[in-house]
Image (cartoon, rainbow, N blue to C red):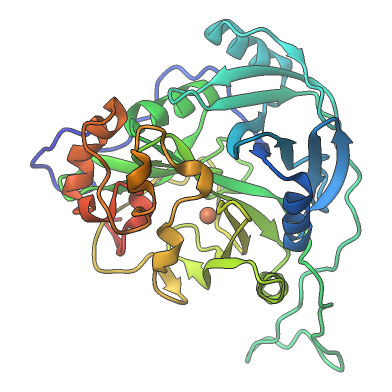
Length: 390
Ligand SMILES: [Fe+2]
């Protein structure tokens, strides 16, 4: 697996999992971000559907209605940034194995629920906190999924559909999308260190890999189609965070509430082609996209990976076409290597300054292959079409 051009047909290069896997993560726990204004951030997140769980100094922890005591943490800082991604492992042996492999030490997890953790750095330097022994919280009351009548399936009689006008209940943090100028190394690291496995691999016309929807390997227990989507991009960054809600009505309710509060909409409502989620994307005050989703695919470990390439079919199976405003980068996404004068031209207009840094130098060949140079090396989410190879 590499990104050197070949003459092979799309889909002909499998994304091989490493033979030696250090540990198998079993859940995505939380994201940790920095924001300059905690009140403003808290207002957005609670309008989005998260609940304040605890405050520790300059950090606010948020939860959903599920059993995880924290799914999002925000620390006050001068600049918005991604501070870390939290995952769990099912046993202490996994934590020990990760500590031994990485040289990191096992330390107390001081966030809600406690436990122990090791702090790793992925190949791009993104902090990955792996937690074991965190105590679960009691789930909070939430409305049950709406029973939908269908022509041949009447499940609701003498009853109505009137969900409350309120932010949708978030059940969990579902996935994060991370961009990388060194996708091959990054995807191998997550497979080897944390056992991730590919659900759908995105390839270029020359068959090389450029992105992968990765799920947790939980054996016979189904996992979400993707917990991480790792994709080639100009810089190491987060593209969006996705949160599961109860059902389609909750996704629509989220749009209604966030639109009324005049937040910036990015894309939706639609149903994704890869993963099948019904989705809707909204930006926080610093431009980071937050996704509401429902009804995603779940696969157990026996499901082989699918392959797709840039093509004629849009990235949705139902819903609006790819929104240009979805491509704009978040405020914290500007790589420091981009000259300030060029920054306001991003978001679909100007090319990055090639050669200004090694990350861009590495990214250029693949981005050129995708004809994305005129739109900046935003990331491969700028693909306007997808063709399923298998
Ligand atoms: Fe997503």
